[in-house]
Length: 64
Image 1 (cartoon, rainbow, N blue to C red):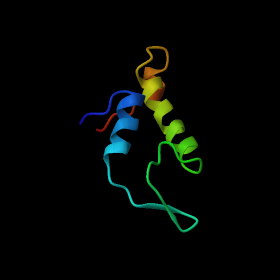
Image 2 (cartoon, helix red, strand yellow):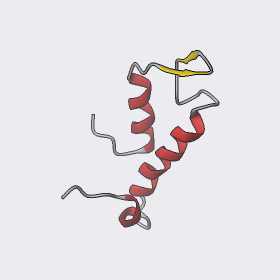
Image 3 (cartoon, one colour):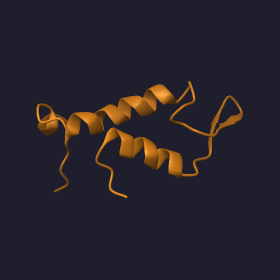
């Protein structure tokens, strides 16, 4: 799955079977848990910025 939007990014994280623990308890959905959701949303913003013509150059990386 090619990730192009913030929603694509969030969906891809939900599909993966991550084993993430916080304070000894497993986090089932990193996109919604209070300890991880802010970080996930911050990363998702980069996808939103990359699709905005005003910020595309700033938020897009090219592999050379």
